Image 1: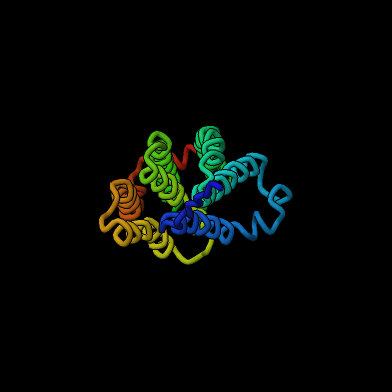
Image 2: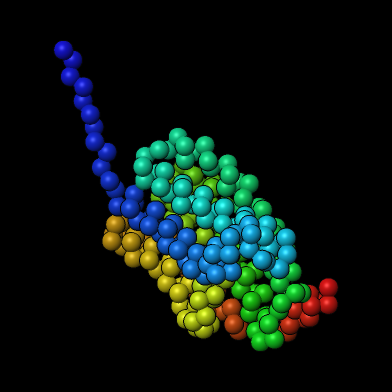
Length: 232
């Protein structure tokens, strides 16, 4: 009688950390948009326009996909993970297009009297960071360490609008945004005994954005942009 050897798959620290980060991102989005979107019935929510509905559906689909993908890798179901991968290639350009369209629409429809330039600059810059990091992650999909960090850190970059709806003030909002990649940096130091290159670059980009968004948005160019959008 032949003996069957069963090799137990060990749970790696990554199998816990990265799904946890994806769930943290989902929690931030749900708490930020809970009253206006999730508790309002999502597709049934009374949003300002159809564009806002499409924008919300695309962005939350990305978050759900991120949670699913990290959990599939944690469960060692790489085959299904790879089958779902092309969805990211569809969602990412859609997020860019509808993210910009919704930003323009917001500036025209409901721009606040105080600080509209900071909103415009902040959203455009974080969307650019998201595109840069997630594109890097998709290109480096055969390098698991780079891929998972780039996808998580890229998505963390666009958490600003959700965190801002906590109404904790601009400085606290910027502090939370900066703290998110620092969680990954701390994990790298613990798990790798060094900071992964992807984490270092993403943290530097986020820090540069946090510390420059307000002074950069004070440039006259952005005021002219806001005035132009208001007149559209």
